Length: 263
Image 1 (cartoon, rainbow, N blue to C red):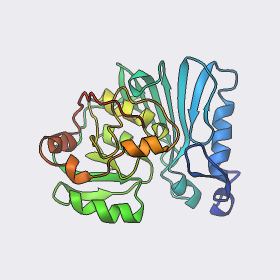
Image 2 (cartoon, rainbow, N blue to C red; image 1 turned 90 degrees about the vertical axis):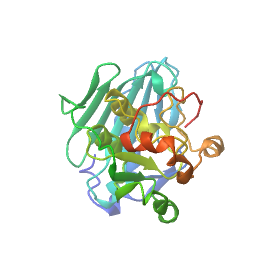
Image 3 (cartoon, one colour; image 1 turned 135 degrees about the vertical axis):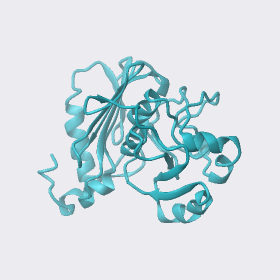
Image 4 (cartoon, one colour; image 1 turned 180 degrees about the vertical axis):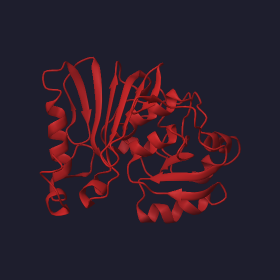
């Protein structure tokens, strides 16, 4: 599929608007078409970036065919395929996660209760640092970075802006970075697989009101950036990174939140 769309000229034309609210580019549409074809005939409810939700099966498959589509269309080799399989409608029901890095060829997997893996090797021995040397920011429109980066100046030594939330969560699970946050609402398709890797190694990433407690186990799968999801999203980093929450952010500590937040 990528070989058939080799350059930005072929990849970036907008061909539709996705159910998630973003423009659907040629590479988004092509990737989703290939992936969804693999699930033809499967009795499942498919939640995907571009087509929204289809099917009515009890098994749920949450798909982002290209997470990091801006990188993909510009030829930057940091974008991924993210697939999560759940036996119910919430993040806590996910039992399998898979993220494929198109740039490095790395395959990240997790199975509920059985651990997280990179190319078949178990993760967990290398942990994020107790103090944040590298904090990854995602959903980084320039105005959001300008507003929020100063709020973490005393917390994080350096920032990294990678461009794929799914892969950033994988790197957190591997201890390559020390925290991940998004600066605007995050859809379930972006994090469904990556959050399971983090959970399976005992991490919750950067949590709290930054992105509506996206790791809450009872957060339901919603593919669209709806008015409801935006209303639940509080983007005040200062309120999250003070006091007791600071320890959870720095250590990536898992926590059982009681709030019910839709993504």
